[in-house]
Image (cartoon, rainbow over all chains, first blue to last red; front, side, top):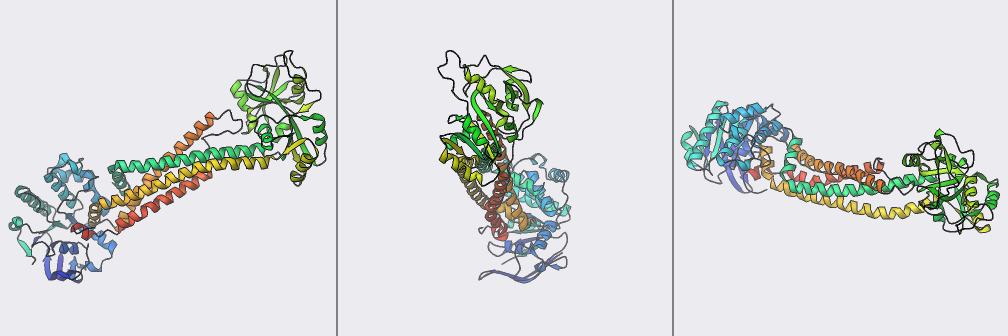
Length: 209
Length: 399
């Protein structure tokens, strides 16, 4: 589904990615690990079209995303990608439900309250549906963030350091939930992390140096 | 959920600053609206009252006072002129119409005008019931007089001496209401119109205890004149002021002067309204700029979720437009309510009927300007949101 070929990127003079190539097949999971500053987040942003590749190709379903215009990239993200961020970054002015419904505004997909309620039920946070992020525990926020990433039924979920600020128990829970729901939704999961605790959960591991 | 709803969520998330922007705009718009309404009401009604009169001929004194007393019925007259002399002027071939009016008495604060029936033609007035005065002590009354006093056709009433309500009643000379005048939206609505003869009759028989002497010859207060030639509007008054002991006053000139004096006052009020509106835009600008910085992560996340730059731009502009539109609408409503109150308080001012019910094109103009200015205030914050570098924000390396 995703094919990265000979990808390079540098910030002014500092190269972070150098001739990187790999594939992510449909429903396949991948952990990208490496120390801070090796370009893990950069790689995610390149794959999501938030950054433009300087050399090399990123092919998504036979299209080099470098050839897409900005509005096409917006649609590409809205339709195919779910994001999970390190701090979860829920929008404070919206309730948990509204945070998830955002995906509906941007993707144009018909996401009903019932769909969200069902996802919340599966994630065991049905009671949080009308709460603001400030009223949620870390564990609940993380689940709302997962629900938000799943809401537009993405083909691939990008998770940027989803566990690095969590204790062992929450980290384990989060990665299990992510893997479980990615599999259940037939989506690929790409996690970038420096957190070695989650290494053994993945078959495919790409180590950046 | 749509993006308008999203803008509303953000407005309510920062309640205090949203409310501050709204309230400032509300106060500014209400000030502007009230000042505009009162001024336009006065301007319109004043011009309506003097529309068909080219010149007023009265006793020597202030020209403005002559106009105020005989056209707007606000001030007291400068005195009386000799009826014989007035008649001589009335016969001049240069004059198209000349309507004498005699003031002096009132009924419950409404002035009784002794005049000819041509007085009603000046205001294009018709009777809604009854007939024109044909005998001494017949009177027709304006709509407001009828509504306020409850007088009907056939009723009798007693005038009191002087233009203010007083106990000095002309008990021996009751008037009879013969007709009620259709509403004209002019000062006529608040007048009692009778015949010259009635007023002369009453004042030629002074009460025993009255010290005032009956005038030896017939007098009238003023002549309301229209000319055949527009040139005479300028020339005739000069002749009068030079060759007689009467004074000619031009309603058009004095009214313009009056409105320009009022205009300075209302201009100042409007200026303060504009300052308030302008400061509300400055605050909206600062609040939004700050808010866009505060929610850079929100914006980055929305972009990552597939929101286009245009969507972010629209959300921010919509947010400002919602605040300014609600401030504008509430301000307009409040302004009309204030003008209504001002109208209720100033009912004694004959003919300067101020009301909150009328809308003026000026309101449309400043409403459009306010919307344009609010878009301008939102523009820079919206561009800032539009330009957000999503990758940089999400990787935590700054804005």
